[in-house]
Length: 316
Ligand code: SER
Image (cartoon, rainbow, N blue to C red):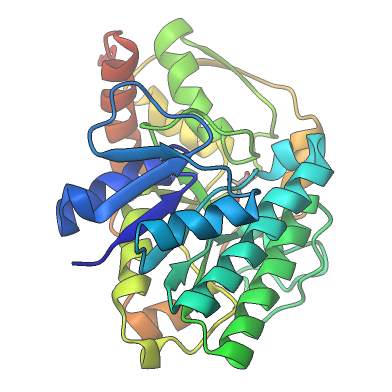
């Protein structure tokens, strides 16, 4: 059985990934770490600040870890609010993780993002090998991080794998401080108040993905044979692209919802990101495929968020 460490385990992706890894490998095989722990978690959970390099290394050694999913990160909006922390957390802790992986022969996963692209990138669909000149600190850490992963693979043979996640739609974790996160917040506001104020324009189409597909991709790339992983920066990954107005239309098929559009600094970030992604390399190299479309995503989110916050899902 592998001995798996997940950092940032109670964030957007970790909250679901830990559960899937526990189901797959057994609860004792997984240690979930974060800077805060939830009360009702079942399994091994410990506080770990990945910015403390020595503690991170000692933790890995003490627990005989052989696989790391290094998810601890600020998102785009959180990064703009604190660029220094974004640099230290998103990139500094990745360097620490890669050093530990090199020294202890650990297989590892690190997430990149559509934020690696920028206004000068080739778009629609956005090719794998592209101009990467992002203008957010989040995007800068993703591009630098991708190159650092590839460097550690080429120079030291570190088996590090990565995908460029689109906006992830999930219900277990909190709503994150990002740009695509409007598409999560909308479900909470719609169910609680029947109203939503959107910080993007109605036609701001962005690449998105339901959490189940994101988890399948994450575990899928980690299970592929090392020879199949041709790209050691980060793979483009795509599922569905939608705009706020398209999402609102789909939600209104289920419940009543009033929406006001007030585009702000979030729109400035969205303007630099792609609308659609060409992920043919991931499909070819390690068999990636998505399964959840927009109607299904909306149905699941309405059901799960209404249960979580204890309101009726208001089905017409
Ligand atoms: N969801 C992220 C953000 O908006 C994109 O990687 O910041």
